[in-house]
Length: 402
Ligand SMILES: Cc1ncc(COP(=O)(O)O)c(C=O)c1O
Image 1 (cartoon, rainbow, N blue to C red):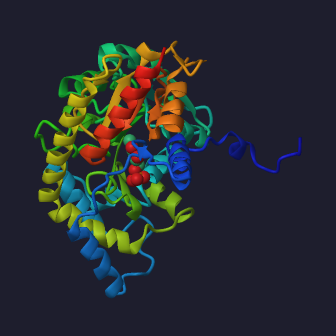
Image 2 (cartoon, rainbow, N blue to C red):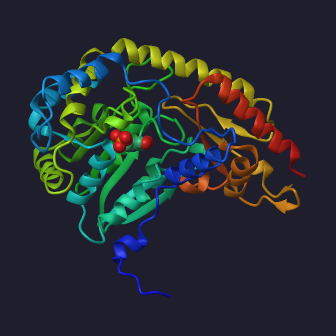
Image 3 (cartoon, helix red, strand yellow):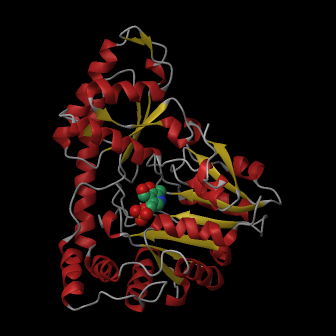
């Protein structure tokens, strides 16, 4: 074998599995197949007009130069106002760092918080990037596997068991990607009680989907509502990608204690540099005036969800968990494992999803990628007609299993 010139870090780096699947689906599409992709965590509706117009305006007005590395003061003002309206929290603009996507905000937070061998508690099913991000910070991801009995959420007992003197970060997401489950106020309070006994531990609360809710609430409950005393060690993550359908604009942010936020800004200044000036300008009106759009989005998602849930009833072998927020369906497929497809045994959820893509041209993400084999994640950020067609193809595959 040829000697590699790649660093150990690069050799250990895993390609983002969802992006890999998207590429495979595109490849099949290029070969002329009618592929339905339910993989990617991306809204299928356009960026809201208020934001798109502001993007044009930024170009026309020449707002096309470097901004401060941690973002413009105008955007920071909109971010803190939004947070105040949504959750009632009071933050100063100096406690906000704007980054090139929320992914980089989480990445940078882990970089500035973790020393080698520090532990980062992540519970599965997790968002695919969390463990690798912890590893890239030379930290050790400690995965706590969660099950159906707690709606795939970490319990206070599990959290206490995982915490120790090496723990530096507890990283979690509500509503969850991939399950769509939300931590209730009581659950957050109970987790906060445990965290109070471990003062070294920082909390990264990934709130990326907290405006996409199906019960009519404005926003998902937050750990800092239940335990404001954790504020000095909590970093709030959010961004424009999901609720505002601005994935390609690449704007995220971290909000938290000044010292940590300053470090995230410094880290960004030496790596990505400032986030796009045009995108920053576009996010401001989305935050200030996007409420009617978010309301409409939630109504659309709710209607799509109920249509999908109804259709999935036709596949008795699947156990579909009804999400409370975000735009994913988490589905147990254990009942179909062990059966054969064209003489080949379908042993794992990964096998099942591979056949679904290669033979039925429906792309979904197997549970293995989220740390919970036996499941799959199906995005319903897609028109109902295509969704129903995709579920029909899943049904055909299940029907052909022997
Ligand atoms: C749970 C979660 N957090 C953070 C992000 C990052 O979003 P972005 O980098 O597009 O702002 C995503 C995107 O898929 C996500 O699902």
